Length: 368
Image (cartoon, rainbow, N blue to C red; front, side, top):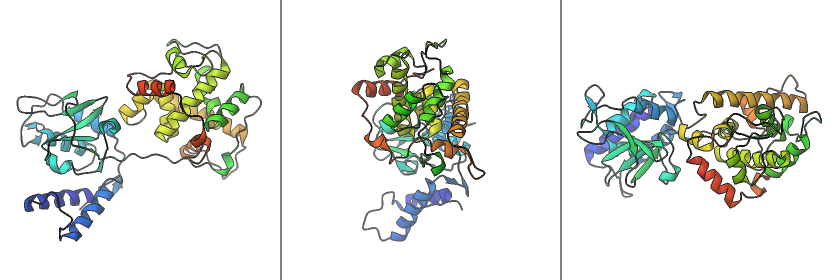
């Protein structure tokens, strides 16, 4: 029996005994301890004896496949119809995760999310006291739900305030640990604008080589470059983004400073180099909405291009030995650790904070 099956069975037994909410005086301490252990294991990313590679975006995609299925109370069989908890159970089963059958039991699964503002695609939204309705959060204030008799599975705006929000798939980030072989902040003199990258990197606590790699991919180090989408300058910043940052995108010094601030904020928000680069290209809102690198061909190609450029720059900075391997985690390590000057770097101005907030709710990226 897997941990998820064990949790489901525990929930069923409690339901039969009429004990959905054990009190502190509950004498079945062993069962409560077991429940806590199962909860922890279930949300640690293990499903049927293996680490799950499922994402919230995958759950949303699975649920959307049932759009148009008629609502049928008590059914979790799509061919017959689906009720709200049947839809949730089916969507998660499609990505390899087994959930309890009822909305009430599903609403006690996983880990709690404090508010809708913190919800991510794939999280469960429960309604009612006691819980009598449940849906899957799709991002941007929308949810996928089987509403009620006479309706069909569909995506609609979140209406009302959820009484519980649960995250079934935990957020996994890669800690930024800088290996000794990659601690230099110096760039070869042959790199255009090396002094600007080094200065901005030191100021905002990110690798100068990362800034240089982004510039190489974005513009080929051309400060006068303008893309078809209208992105400008060395770091290819869109005009609206430049205004929010308070910089002139065609001024190399200002452009590098603005890009460093954005990359620093993305690294802090997502804690992962791949996601930070995806956010630079497609916008942080898109990364949050899809629960990872968005499925846009440009963004899918952009991230490995920058990492390849970063690897080349790193080899130029620090000659590699036979024992030095530039793995994805090593590349991620080029962003400074949480103990770096990021914590003491200049705070984002109100205008930048407003820009990043606007970005998180937009449909497209701010940069090209």
